[in-house]
Amino acid sequence: MPMNSQLTALFVEDDVVTAAVYQQWLIKEPMEVTLVSSGTAALAFLNQTIPNIILLDLGLPDINGMEILKYVQQQQMNTAVIIITAQNSIEVVVEVMRSGAVDFIEKPFTQEQLIIKLHQALQHQQLHQSTNRLKIKRQQYHEMIGASPQMQIIYQMIENVAKSKATVLIMGESGTGKELCALAIHQQSQRRDKPFIALNCGAIQQNLVESELFGHLKGAFTGAIDHRQGAATQAHQGTLFLDEIGEMTLGLQTRLLRLMQMGTFKKVGNDHEESVDIRFICATHRDLNAEVKAGRFREDLFYRLNVVPMTLPALRQRGFDILLLARIFLHKYAQLEKKAVKIFSPEVENILLHYEWPGNIRQLQNIIHRIVLLNEGPVVTVNMLPEKLLHTDSRKPDQQQRQTSAVAEFSPLLTLKQAEKQAIENAIAFCDGDVSKAAKYLQVAQSTLYRKLKNHQIPYKRTLFD
Image 1 (tube, one colour):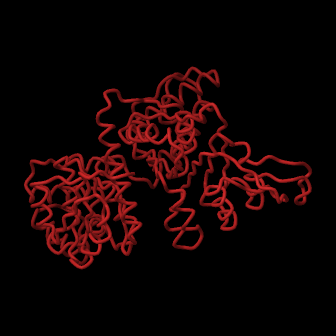
Image 2 (tube, one colour; image 1 turned 90 degrees about the vertical axis):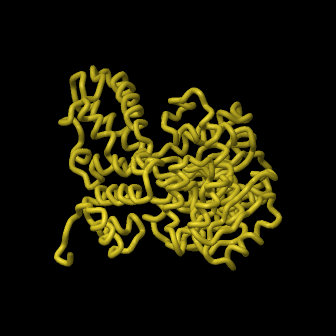
C-alpha cells in the first residue's frame, strides 16, 4: 500500500545502533521517523505528537513496553502499534494483540519484513478509521454473519480489496468462515459473474491435489480413465480459492508459484501449456511464517500470497456475535427439522456466550443442529446442552469477562499507581490467584509481582514459600 508524504513514525528502541539501522532501512520511504531510546522519552513524545505508526520494543530500560501500549489505548490515540519482541512466546503475542497492537515482529528481522509490516499496519489503521465512520453496523455481509467491531473491519477490508486482482491470504482458526470470506470477496469483485472455484488442499490426498488443481489427460496415471479439467481451467476469468494452502507439498508449491507468476500451467501428462486469467484467494489455519522457517513452505510463494493478508477473528473473540449466530442457526434448523423450538433460556445463552468454542462457527452450528434434532419444546434449556459445554477445561465465564474487558476497563483518568493496581488485580483474578501465572501474564518477575501485591494489599493464593 503506498505511503503518502505526511506519514510519521515513532521508533522506541533502547539499542541506538539497532534503531539507526531501522532508520537507514526506511530512508527511501516517504516517512518521517523519530527515534527514542526509553519509555519516558516515548511518553513525552506522545504527549506532544500522535504518529501514524509506533514501532515499540517491549524490553525498555525504564518502562515496560506494555505500559506504553496500554497508554496509547487509554488515550484512544489513532495510531497503529507494532510490537518488537525477541520472546518467541504465544502468551506475549496474545497479550500485545489483546492490548491493542495491530501486529508484532520478532527479532531478528529483515528490511523487507519491516517495510511490509509498516505498510500492513498503515492499511489496518486506515481501515479502522473507515469502520469508525460507518453509521450503520452491518449484522450480515453476503453469507457472513456478525455485528462485532472485528467483523465490521473485515467487511470494510473486503470492499477495499475486492475490486483489484491482488492475491488475498485469509488466515484464522479452522471453522472461522474463511471460505465465506473468499466468496464475499468474489461476489464484491468485477468477476462476480464468472466462476468461483474452491479447492481444499487439506481434504484431498496429496497425490491427487496436482490433478485436481491442474487437471490431467486420459491415461496420465493409474485411474485416469478420462480427460479432466482442473480447478485452474475451471476458474478462468474468475476466482480460484485454495483452502488450507499450508498443506500443499513443496513440489506442488513450485508449480503453483509459476501459475501465479506466469498465468500458465500444464495438465498432468501433457506437454502443452495453457494460459488462464485467475484471481487467487488462499486460506490457511497455519502460521506460514513458521512453516517458511521450518522449510515446509516456500518463502517466495509466501510473499506472493501475502499481498493482502486478512485474519478472521476466532468466535470466542467476537462477543455477542456468538448469540447472534446461535439464534440464526436455531431458527434455521427449527424450520428445517419442523420443530417448535424458538428461543434459548437465559442460562443457556450465558453458557454459549462464555464457552471457548475451539471449533468456532462450525462447532456452534453443529451443536445447535444437534440440540434441535434431539429435543422437543419451545425453549432450549440447560439440560439439552451437550456435556462438553457444561463440564469443560475452558475458562470460567467470570474469567473470560475479566480478560476481554481488561483493556476496556482501564480508565484514562486513573493515576499510574491506580492503573498498576487494577492491572495486577485483573491478572490475579484471571489466573485464579496463581502468582506464577499472573507474573507470566504481566511479563514481570515473580519476585517483583509479590512485592507489588504486598504494596497494593492485593490478596492471592499463598504457598509454602510465602
